[in-house]
Amino acid sequence: MTGLALLSSTPSLIALPLIGDAPQRTQTRFLEFFAANIRNPNTRRAYARAAGDLLDWCAARGVRDLAGITPIHVAGWIEQLGATLSAPTVKLRLAAIRNLFDWLVVGQAVPFNPASSVRGPAHSARTGRTPVLQADEARALIDAIDT
Image (cartoon, rainbow, N blue to C red; front, side):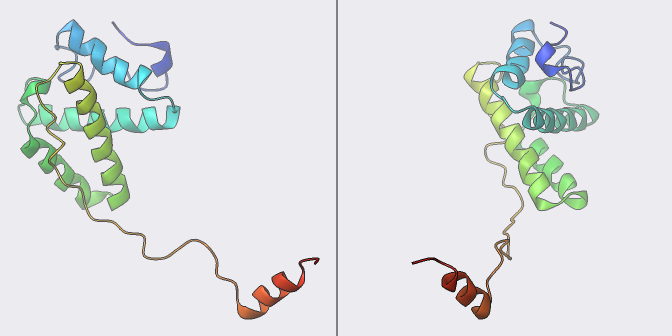
């Protein structure tokens, strides 16, 4: 399989390191994750970027196949991402990898999910986005209600 029309906006996923040499069944399951499991094209693109980044990172460190990726690899990748990207972006990429490997485990393409035990960076929104009404604004709003 060389690609799917649904994935035309992403780079060829089969050409990614560790996927191109994988068995046909694993390649198909990998593509199905993006085509059948993710409906939103923006999410699909973000998850494909995360998968590509992790696979490139692992291949550069001598990992030869998907089953060779361990929690140590995923944790190292997350640590490196945390040095240059915001915490929400790192959390999104870790979520993408967790979901991908969950899909691959269910399809028996890999024996376990190496991202399931890896913790992402802590992030908490400290300020709300909802504007607070001042007392005079609240009074004007209440007075405007026609009773």
